[in-house]
Length: 312
Image 1 (tube, rainbow, N blue to C red):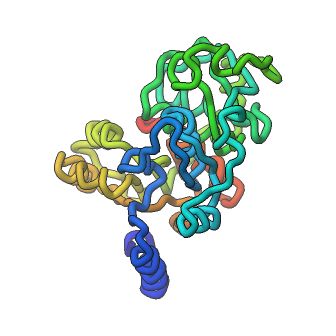
Image 2 (image 1 turned 120 degrees about the horizontal axis):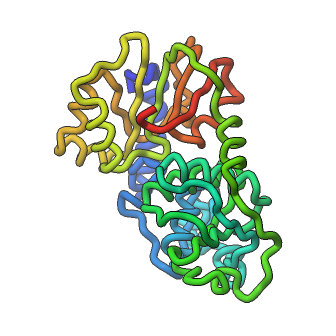
C-alpha cells in the first residue's frame, strides 16, 4: 500500500473496515474477477453481486441468475438469505433484444475489448445484446475484456454469444422466439470511432502506465513477463501491474512476479487506479490496455490518455 502513496491513517481506516467485513464472514478476495478465484455460480443458480463485468460474465457464460445489485442489496441478501425475484432471476427476462452481426476483426484481445466497448455504446440501457455471427471464437480472457468494456458503455447484465453461451446455442434460442428490437452490424468504422473516443492521437512522453483491468490472469502475466524480461522501465515512468492476490501467488511460484518487478514495475493486487483514486500526481500522459480504465479516467484528468494493447 505504501507504493500507492496511501497514508498511514488511510491504511488503518481501510484495514478497520476490512476487519469488520472479515468478522461478518466475508472472504477478502479483493478482485474484479471473482469468477477466477472461486466464486462460480452454476447455471440456474441465483446470486447477488456488484462488479458489472463479473455479472455479465456469470450470467452469460455460466447461465447463473443475478444483477449488478450493489453493496446495499448484497448486505440485505446476505442477512436475509433471500433476494427479490425480478429481472434476470426470471427466465422469461433473459432473452436477447438487440442482434449484432460482426463485420470487424476479432483476432486479438484488443479487438474484443474494442468490440465490447462498441456494442455497449450502441445498446440501450437494460437491453440484452446478441452476437449472432461473423466473430472468431473467443477465450475467457478476451471475453473478460469485452464484457468489462461493454458494461462500461452500455451496462448490459447479460450478453448472448451464439454457439458459445449456454442459453444461445442458436440465434432462435437466444431470442426466445421474439423478434429483435434491432439488428445492427459492427464495422471497422465503428471500431475506429471507439478508438478515437478512447485514445489521444499522436505521441507524447508517458509518465504512467497501468496494466490489468480487469485483473490479469496468470496467462496474461506470463505473456507480460515474456515481453518485459531483461528490459528496464524508463526511470521517469511508473508502470503498475494489477492482478488478484490468489493469481499473484501463482505468479510468484512461476517466477513471473520477479521478472516483472526486476524490470522496475510495481506489482499490485486488490484494487486499480480507478477505484483507489491513486493515479500518480503530476502525470501529464498516461496509457492503459483497458478500454474501461481509459474511458472512466479520461474525463477526470487533464493528462493525455492513450489506449492500446499490452505490447503497445
